[in-house]
Length: 460
Image (tube, rainbow, N blue to C red; front, side, top):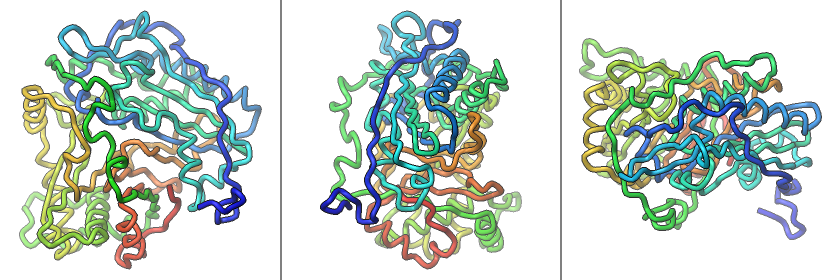
């Protein structure tokens, strides 16, 4: 809300971000592989949007020098993570790949910008401007299929009053969260200047994940893709909030969930994990906030890392997408009639059942009938979790120390989307970035069962 004089109602002047330069950064050395085929795990994300991440740092020094170090580190990182420097291409059979030589080697787009009147602390505060935060991240509204004509990685480096904002947009058809943070930590490592090689090299052989060639028919353009963005077709506005769960409260939720066993628990059932306990807590709270009819089905989806689940398992260094959505659903009345352990048991059972055989079956079904995916496929009452508190996002140190805050951009956020990050304070603290319809979010913030266990750290 902005007053008549251009000043927001909170009294702060609404700053603007000014772009000062754009350039493409190429790998320090040309890739040894001319192309990289996409695996079946990658293809379903072609009609999603670029994944956006924003890291805010306190930093001293001349901005041009900082940018120079970051660009040098990026060039070195792209030498190892060369698919991010390529461009999407379809061969004569319609099979998608990344072209990494000749005209296909386009590098990463790097945007330099300034917002000198904005301090880092202002962007971390609960009432920081959604519009300003979004101006710090590139490629908002850009679909992954546009990687046929755009770079697969875009970076925006913005000078702040007392620091720097590093906004990144990754083509989701190229990599998942595990690979994203592997790249980010490697880029930071190389930008320090004390290392000439990354600690853990990425594994690029996608044939290890799946060797089947899958021709697909792509929309002629993003605008031709039906149901492009739920934000555009939804008359009800969406609101994003970041809720911080301190370690003590994460432990409280986990202990409470495990202290109420199911009526007939399997003899071999392990204790509920932190993820399962917290996810069940969020799922039930969102279902209450939505005010669902008793017989309405509510679905929980988690994007599970399949690296340790495939046969044979693949290491964390596998670079690409190796995730699948795992779904479980239940009528809302049944979900809310039971304590947290009931929802946690549903999640645990679904996750445990997603073994190598289930993964292969899902791949074979997709290969027999490839399709473009929509957010609406998950259902109107879905809660979906992406990212993971296991990702060490606050260890990404470019030489400025750890980030003051890590956030997601607007892309790929729909009603019920949740991103989990480790809390900045360390320990077992967890940040929950949640998007809901405005009315549901307002009810959630007043929910006495949900709110006493969280602190609203920031708003987007």
